[in-house]
Length: 343
Ligand SMILES: [Zn+2]
Image (cartoon, rainbow, N blue to C red; front, side, top):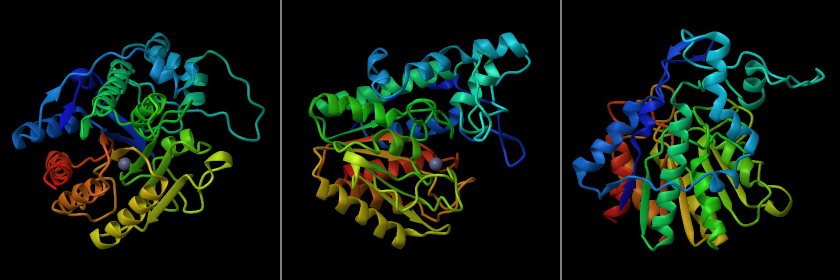
């Protein structure tokens, strides 16, 4: 299968993120995608190709123009305010419920308006990387639309936590949603399967009231895990989208047998929806040695994951999401793609 990749992702290199009361070295770093690219080349899984430019229109089908404008200028505004020795824009105040909200053009007001956490810094190259990531996802969608059986969008930064007008969770633009919307606009019927450890809250919100796009996610129970506020089993869609969202939260410590059961459950629901294209938010932070997550999948389990996804017999677009074990990320990502391809 073709892999789409842009080296513009290297420009998004935040030094730190603020979590658990202190600054930590960032875990969503350029080396992640570089390791994955190296493994794909080493295993000879197919060509690695540069994306095409799709312009702003497909992004604006998913995201509010206010968010897109903000992301494009946020870092400049931050530096004007705080100078070059403050490399990363991180919010410190939000328009809390119960207080009468006013919004100004000040960078702090705008950061608090558009960001939902403190772990998603905006550095000088963030917008260039996010923008290229959308093109990577769209190029993979175009390959699928042209008849490819599968494609891998090696997107970085990831996307599944970003919603129409909110960014967070290391995500700025929702790559998989942009690809799914583009495919829907071409007359296709997409289903999205999110296998990242964390619930795809952004993707869920974007399609929650939509009858034409199915969303299912297998993830750590949000009662104990990020993103904390969405991803519970009783969220099933609303209005015209009722029944078109399926959440499968699993407890911390989940190993392959229970995970596989969840995967079969998700794929049965996808089959019932009857899509003609499958998009997979491929997060690899379900790995047993992931530094920020608590599932216990082993390296060989990822071959099986790829084979089970292949068994849906649909044109399949994988987008890269989370996964933070630098030593294993290349191997386990390639295991999924090889498991799919060799089946
Ligand atoms: Zn994740």
